[in-house]
Length: 430
View: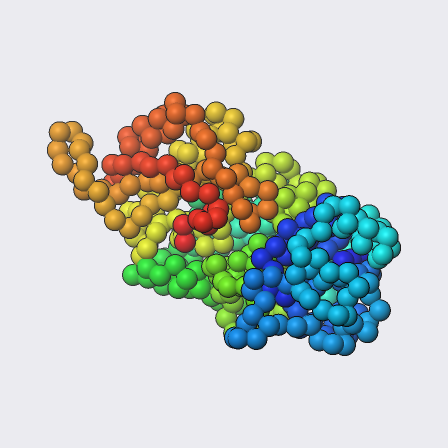
């Protein structure tokens, strides 16, 4: 690893990511690790220059305050503590130090160099991927979203034709999404791409399932099963590439943080998984993933495309998935994206989409009573997906989108606009 590293040990802080980003903004790489890391594990991390014990409101677990192992204090790394009283650290802070204090610790006390950049990150990951994979093959779920696209480009740079990309059409894709994936990756980028039509298989498994966590786990597990089946048709597949990024991990819960929601690539993996995971982006925030994609030479249209959850429209068709509501989500989402692009909002707004709840409301159409679904529009801005604000869309644009959805989408008689920031809401509804 070329980058110097400041290790943050999570002792229950809710601001680990804030601290990590503050250090990365100084040009120094920072990683977050669990409080119970062992001395040999800490020493095994290359180029560690210092350690921060980051305590906080979640420090008490099962009635006892979590502590680091005493052996860590003898590792020889400069160490400070934040909101974590200990006689072992010379410097202690009640909250995250101001920028100047952080600089003093990182550069003066730790002697770290400001060498955190995407070029070095990519070089490090290419080396680590080659060491992990050797001459074997990696199977990658290629949805065409930002994360999987960047992972694909990184793996291609590292191992070339040893990467086998699988695109699964689970019936929960956006309009024309699968066709676009095939065009870009197979026809333009010449990727080793396998296309799997599993629409009926997924929708059958999801029939009648309303609980969002159960839906996510079914979709995640079924994805893995499809990959296992495809792997059996190939030789030498020992690894599964994944576009896991840091917000996925933190939202799926840690030893001192409660779960917000499970992610198909974190909490939904089956226990009998037959692959070893390759997750080169798992310490990156979303903006850093995009920067990585740019450095790898991916086209802007791919790097800056709309984020899309692994379970796809399955978590935007709220409650038990029905085909009529799924189609309403797909068509209304396409209209929203088309109108945002026309208005130039596609380059301004970080994420925008529609959802359709699993209940109906009374309406009127052609002088007759209707009892149909509503479409909810969500448009938010964020840097790292950990917090988000609402985009104030011009009324005339919203009116045009509303008129089109009501006129063009079947089984819909009402359109609403979601005004909820994150927190207290999450970006997705489920």
